[in-house]
Length: 253
Length: 268
Image 1 (tube, rainbow over the protein chains, first blue to last red):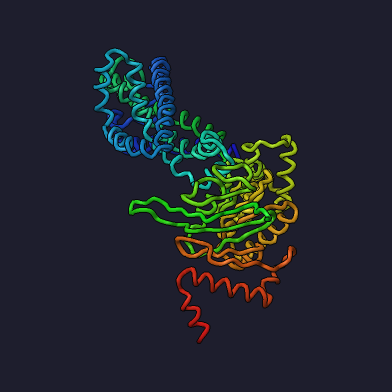
Image 2: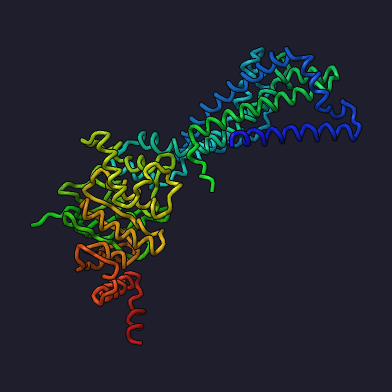
């Protein structure tokens, strides 16, 4: 069972790589048009230390941004989910903010906090990824059926007890669903900052260097490295979901 | 004077809506003696659910009084158990943990071990032995409703409020659950109020049926049910039961404001 769970996706990845290689080979594309998987390995190897160093920069800044998103998003979601007035007040603001393309926010943040590269990058990763978390938590809390509240309220349970024993666990599946979206968004945020406001750090910077020095395989290699990191973080979230909200998965029939 | 365990005295209540107050209860009187089981029937939207919330102390009536065991109800009391049409089991808990939920809120003298034993005993009583460790999603609708019933009585409430608990079940499952209710009541005596749309259910389960008028609801008609403590589905098909059902059906028509239809039918 577990073997199958690992083998199937790995086989799909390998097939994808072969297909990609064949496509480039059959069309005779030069590597500045489309690098092939066989070009990537030399690029990785040549810059292996930079990949490690910059990869780490990107990874930790993304994770910190994501953690901020979780705290702030859950807090905002709770405020909006438990108070009708707050929801009416905050929703338009939130939607409006989310509609602003974050690429336009990057230079503003960069000007606000000149030179604070770590903070700026984390801030963008956070700003781009908290929205789905806040919305899903607020929806999860506000759509709680009144009967769920009544079974505990009729026994004289406090608001906090009802929240802790019922509302919070009931919202977990929605929360994790949103977190999966937020993971990828946070990566976009980090790289946006690293590419639009280059400051010599992160995989975004490595991508930019590849572009400047016309090293096309390097650019592709950065993309693949980002994809790999995205996959790893995503599956960490999936594992956490299994632990905390595994009950929401219907038994297979 | 015999004191009723549940006493609802000339209760009036109106909801505030955008287009002015909407009266739902207008002079409601219900008395249930200790150990009694009263079924409340009425046209849909006549305020039956409001009645359950009043009894549970989840809201206060505009006028009138609700008394439980000689005490005026002013807020939620742990001496009440509730079951709804939706079994509202918590999906992340096992059936046993679901049944034990009220014991986490209400302080009891039972030890943790005794609590679990009691929950297991109740589950066995309703025929859910062997399902204690299952999740609600693994159970059928009827089984979930049985578990919900166990949760409603696990803390030995003085009053059991059932708000159409069998409304969403198919006819056979429903009749099974009626029998289960009798079994539970004989082992775990309670005083109950059952809200229902099903007239057969009302006379099969209750000792007294109260018919509410259409909105705003008042007590329109009260009927005592003369079936013994031991009841069988066959008891619903005796001439006495047929007559009782006919009277109740007529009362519902009156409540709906369609009494003339019945008289016309009778004349034809």
